[in-house]
Image (cartoon, rainbow, N blue to C red):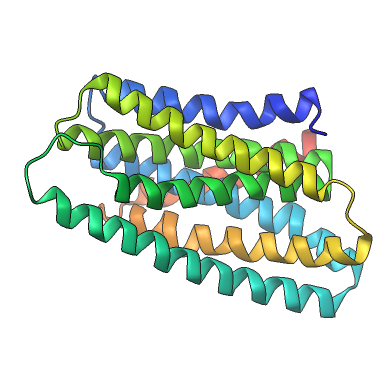
Length: 244
């Protein structure tokens, strides 16, 4: 079962996603601000992988499980990206026709992303309480950027603020389901299976950083300040890990 501490840390990313999305319905964030948040999110997620998950894998000395888990993680993320991008592409085509209906294709693609994010927190807590807490903090930054993006997209389609909030709460519910299922299923894994799951999570998070966060962040022209935010995020999680 999920503990109260785990539930509290899982709730932080969910709360921030809804809050950021709700605020953006009042004032649309600039592309620079969203790029800055994406750079910061990439830095903190990469830091968790490099500082917490990879050292755990090296210490376990299970190369076969690591290779299998890492490979499956890459394959799974490539498959999920194809599915989510197809759903989002269909939604974009539908958006060419003026309509105030909720774009289910777009939300389906985002729902896949947040479901995986929630499951990643389950993997983090399977590795240890510290890893789970840090991963929850890291993904909280990512979900802030995602909340801004979803709300901005729905606003462009002319949806009312109440409809945007309903969509955000539905996505948050998906995220929480992924986290609860992940924590419940993975908390008592045998050690040899845990190594494979950690490798899977490391691959999925690296994919998130390189193929999602940084790719979207670079839609805004790069600047020294934006680049620096990646390293600020990395350093923040590195120091936070030292202090906890």
